[in-house]
Image 1 (cartoon, rainbow, N blue to C red):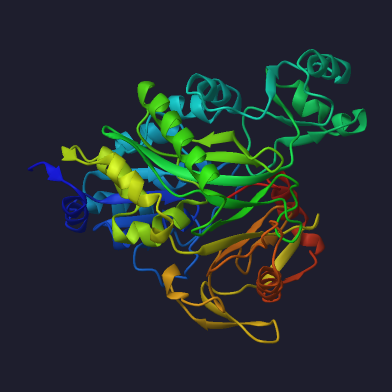
Image 2 (spheres, one colour):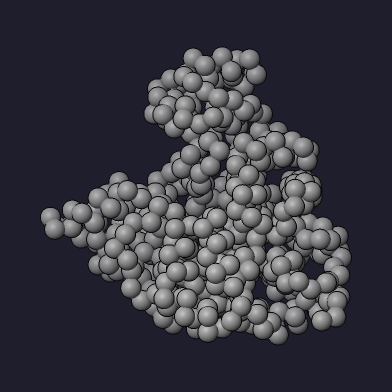
Length: 486
């Protein structure tokens, strides 16, 4: 095939794609809408959020009587399920992408003649490690919040380390791995430390940061052979008790033209480009995300962590107006793995994507069960378009698989995750709501519209207390309390 020259050729290439390409994950949320850009693109999902109404979702009809400890386990189960194996073999050799995978996934993909379109699990784990990512950032001149990396044995040891490095005693500690605030600990006393001492002391090294007055931000990018393509800087919703039980837990994003000042946006974009180039030197190519912390007191942007993968913000990045004008960021990831030569002016594309006029405003809420309780769900809202009424209630409008069909701020697209027959447990993902416009105020608090949407969607979930014969399922659910599908 001839070399692809620019965006038009790239778009045409994927519209005519004849290689079966699969996104394998718990749900199809992260790459929602990509099947409209890539011919022969399918979602192999453990949870069918659309009740059989999405034409490109393949989901085994039965659920096993087992508890999964990770998304990797779910993916490996899916790839070995007869329904999936038969479907993949009927299509012939293809490609597969994942939110998470491990070495077992790599082995199964080879058996199914699927090219796994990501760097190795080993390399991804190295980059995903918050401690090693901090070191890579320093190498790339991308600074973290004032911090030190150390092995901590007790509170006295922590105090000495912080005194020696002038970090003070109001701290944020992160372990190497963990998501959505689950392993981020806020420590300013021995009492705080004791709550998390076992987890902190079990680590060979933790990241100890000075606590700052900050706001979260996220920016996705893609390492290509021609350089790193950088998306827009998004706000992050973090720790809202209406959405998540975790104090440092991610619970949504906003993308809109004036997110942060021009200085902050440019600083984050330049840092992301440098980090991407550092990853390229390590042999990494493809999609990644940088989480940033914006210091409200000194107007600085610090690296928070790196996600060497598709993320919970990916649907926002890939369905924004700039992506429709050119191509979704994820297409450039696939391009890197398509064994075809292409030319692309990365600098020109980055300049265009940094222009606020090319960005429209969208927000998403990730709604979790926030109570420390386990209940059996008897009713759940459908995925599709919902409408916010003048009295603050919400109503279901129609089944829909397209996010952008929510065209006004009174409309939202809701993707249901927890369904009738599932369980409420602390941290369980109930669903994702996406709507035009902002869901936070200028001082980064939930606005009234956000609160109305949260209350309205929750009102359509019904659950009952558990009966005695359900004790065993409850114990199994409790094993994975806090497990994330996103």
